[in-house]
Length: 530
Image (tube, rainbow, N blue to C red; front, side):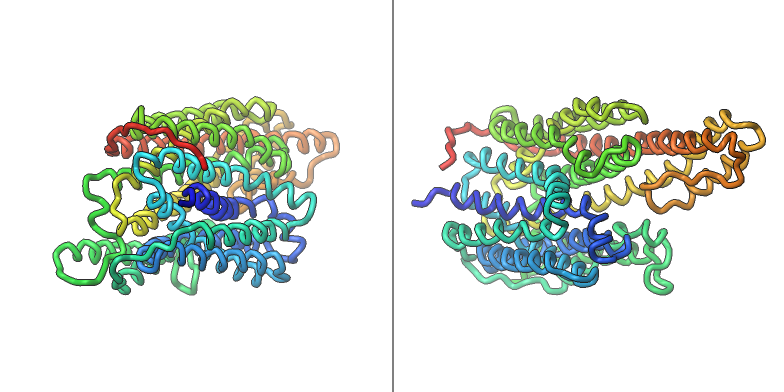
């Protein structure tokens, strides 16, 4: 009998590509701007459309695995993803690249639930510790190393290779998947809830689109008189109708299968695990935005240098994830999850406390390592808790829900922390301007503060310092040029530190949610990778 670990490596390669492509684009934005002659909004959409297409269909694609078998759905998704990667690498216009990334996101959405579904089918509950820890390590390492790999490729080969690198990985994964993955088929044909799938997809599309692009549209009109807020409200209403419809299946006798079986939430552990997963997605996505901008705009690191600085965090997360997979069956999943969330909160708080305009970047490494230890403690036991003792017919649906919670949490975290950071800059930079203006002659102070305040209130990006006021006498011009950067660096640092408090608060809410997880400790047999 073929070892399940042969199939496991193909699943890890697929999942690595999916997670890598969610973060690898960020460092290539300047190169794509010039290479495609695109504007900033078009390049931002290159990443946004991938996340959107990867998030919205997850509930449906998880159920497709239950209907047609996880191998068939995964192979189709892998072919689509790899083909779209080739299209992305060869795109000659912003529109073509955005379209290719949308198709790539759909391929990723087809694969993601199947990777977890296969793990729960390949390994019995008492032997899932090691494979789930490997799966969790892949998730953490791929997410954090994406910018590093992207920076190396952009600086040495060109931005197109951030997509073309998927071709050899995709072809190798496809060959292994076709040979090594078992072709499980459902014992009975499932009839899909088409109306429920439509309500869910449209609701998620509107909510995720609105939250993801609210700042771009200044939370105002997006399509004619329809504002971003209107889109989010309509999306929430549709999701409410979807929830009502799913609950109605409990009271009706029908052969139509709900998209989210009510039995998933029996006992409360699955629901608590998903709330915790959403909090984790919110925090890990939200904390990186102010940190990366602080490293690049205040400390002056290049995108590659700032990504390399995060490598100790990735290494700590990967090693800890493996250890957590070995320990959760002995200590208990809930204990490790709660300790991991608290450790990540402490690490994030430590980073906020350390961050100052003049600090040496290396001084942040201890805080990054602590945060990495926290991330590594959570993923493996949380995934194990969510999938423990699930019946085979619910594995696909459970995987879709579990991955959707992380993706939606990440979108909310990015939008909320970004908005908080923008508001923080609008307050902190003018406050710093008033303090630093004391270095100027009195007759220049009011104009200096006024112009800095206007720049802070109207800035839509965080990558440029406020401009120097005009009509400055030559004898004070040099002083102004020096302090205008000091003002921006001081104010932005204060805003970044304050915005990191939101992920910490959400992590604490995640600890409360994790208290509802109930997974009995298991006698752990010896496992080996074969």
